[in-house]
Length: 208
Image (cartoon, rainbow, N blue to C red):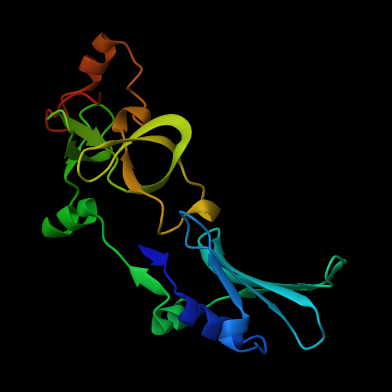
């Protein structure tokens, strides 16, 4: 899994490949809180206010640059699709591995377990209360306080919110796991039917 990272210098150099920038001391560089998004503002040689926005959309890194007159209409807007390999060479993208992915790699890429009722791959996380909780093995980004859903992080702490949409994913968001009871098609079935369905996937605990 990849995520964006940047600093003022690397971002200034990146935007400088597309625009003639004034000296760095005359450029306002701002990082958005809790996201990897950045803004650069400067005035070009024609006196136009220029704003560059570095972010992601649908999992792809993008750089948009718009120009407008001060207090006037927008003059132009260009969106550049950025190459991930180039960003890696610039040190503006990093690869990270979650604990679940490490555990899976230690087992030769084999799934940790399967749900007794639906057969779906699952992983186990020990909650802060000491309980073994089944979760879906792929981690997701979470928008905290954005909804009522509960997730578990690597340490077993509960995070409340909602899963981030692809265009919202960022390195500054917490990464956690979806409780399997939310995705198991048998989670809301009567107990008797769940027991009848189980038994062919290794006798694991119910998906609760």
